[in-house]
Structure formats: C-alpha cells, structure tokens
Length: 178
Image 1 (cartoon, helix red, strand yellow):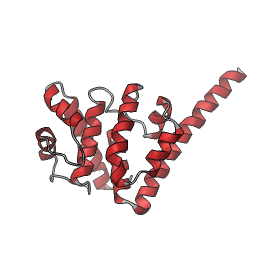
Image 2 (cartoon, rainbow, N blue to C red):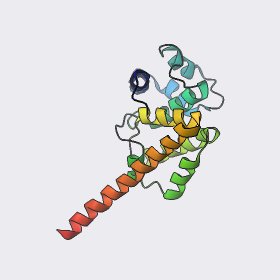
Image 3 (cartoon, rainbow, N blue to C red):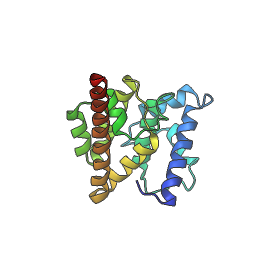
Image 4 (cartoon, rainbow, N blue to C red):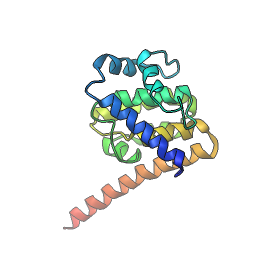
C-alpha cells in the first residue's frame, strides 16, 4: 500500500463509502442490490449512486470492475463487519481460513478476484471476523495492476496471515509454560 497522498485519499474515500453503506438511512433495498451485484457486469442503480458520490468519479486508478468488486464486498460484510481495522491476513487466520483457500487467494489473478473475494468475505462474515475495506481496496488494486505490485500485495497478505499464526502459537506456548 503506497504511503502517498493518493493512498490516504483512497483510504478516506473507501471509509466514507463504507460508512455510507452502514448508515441506517441507507436502506435495505440498495444494500441488497449491492450484495447481489455482479462485479464483472455492475449494472445497478445503487452502485452508480455510490460512484457518483466519489470525488472525481472513479479515482485512484481503480477501474469500474475493481470499484464494483470492492463495493460488493463491503455490502456483503455490512452492516457490522465491514469496518475492521486489521490487515487482511489476521482476520483470515482468526476465522480459520485454511491454507488451501489462502493459496488460491494468493495465486489469484485480476480475473479471478470477482469469484474469490466474495467467497472470502462471506467466510469472514460467517465466522464473525471484521474486514478492513481500505486494506481490501489496496489488495484488489495491486493484484489488478499485476507485476511487482501484485507480488507485494500477496506477500503482505501471506506475511500478515503467518504472523497471526505465530502470535497464536506464542500465546499458546506461554500459557502452557505458566
């Protein structure tokens, strides 16, 4: 995740969008529409209504399909589990996301994300784990960009997952020694 001004703007925009979806005035109809959204063919008034409220339309290098995937994922986790603060690997580990699934996520190409990301989000929601929409936005952005950015995004995700595993093992070890 680049620490640039555009990075902080993306974070602010994504958080504002997530807050809007969580707002009690947002309505169950638009939320249901976003949950049913096909990110590969995002033809839904609720989606375009959210995009219209973004400054500069679709800023920060995310294409229409990337925004659709992100908004769809946020809606799947709304209204309670879409405002997490942890890096993606930690809630995945805490939820019991198996290495086989993690491997598929790490090997995913841009065209695979519309299938894999919603499954991952549904898994997290089913296990009661919160999702940080900004971290997800950067993961989608970087994997979609390909090349070195995609590799770094995958490396961050794996590192966070395995650090969470190591922290759990340390905690278990210290409890068994006391």
